[in-house]
Amino acid sequence: MFPIVNFFRSRSEKEIFPSKFMVVDLSRNLAINLFPTIEGGGCKPVNQNNLRKRLISLLKPLKPRLPDEPDIIADKFFNNLHLIKKQLEQDAEFIALNDPAASGIDEVILAYPGFYAILIYRLAHSLAGLGVPVIPRVITEHAHSLTGIDINPGANIGEQFFIDHGTGIVIGETAIIGNRVKLYQGVTIGALSVNKAMASTKRHPTIEDDVIIYAGSTILGGNTIIGHDSVIGGNVWLTESVPPYSMVYNKHQTTVKDREKKGEI
Image 1 (cartoon, rainbow, N blue to C red):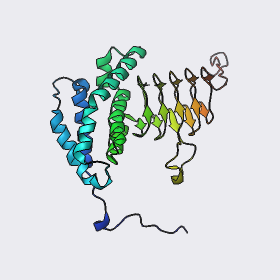
Image 2: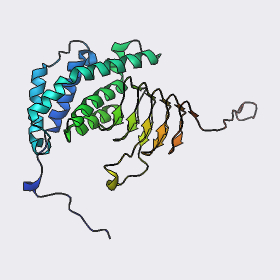
Image 3: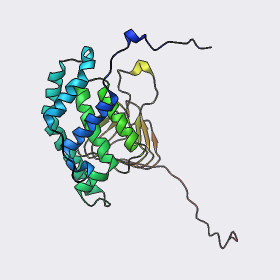
Image 4: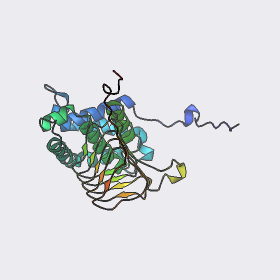
């Protein structure tokens, strides 16, 4: 039998965490502040100073684990917010330009789960970069539950990122994704193995600029590099690097039978 390990400390030793509901509510209001159209007509953005106060209150329980005072971290985050918005505007424009089904940028912002997942990721990534624990993961996992898209806040994702459909996408913590990358549903950018001892190592692939990865493909490993301008076909399994301008696909055979001539109808 395996030994039973008590991972739960006594009540007096438990860490104090911010309210999960308040963390999620903050992320929602940050999204509205950046793009009021994200929840449709009549939605009024919350004042940024009010949001700053909310963030400080959520950071206070985590103070022993923070690299700076909560108010300093909050100031740095909100000073960067205009840059995050610029990135997201580029994402929305890139999606609208590349998806024939999109009627325009407003529709992308209002309706596309891929855009919402990217928005929350970029907010969470900024907080994680400031040394904030727990909160970034809470908000990306909430976005995961809403969209089916799982982006770890530690991943590094470049400009003009396009997620089409999106359901089932997984992007790991140490993944590096370049500019103008397009991902379709069911894509996994993951680790070859799960081992706690590898926590501080690069476990997830690097996807260079202008790569397209089609539905259902799995790309694994920290040393795996997908060269720029490559196309990865659907349902491909990759654990090794490919050079720039590669086309990677599975060979398969599809047979079409005439059921009426065969007497099956």
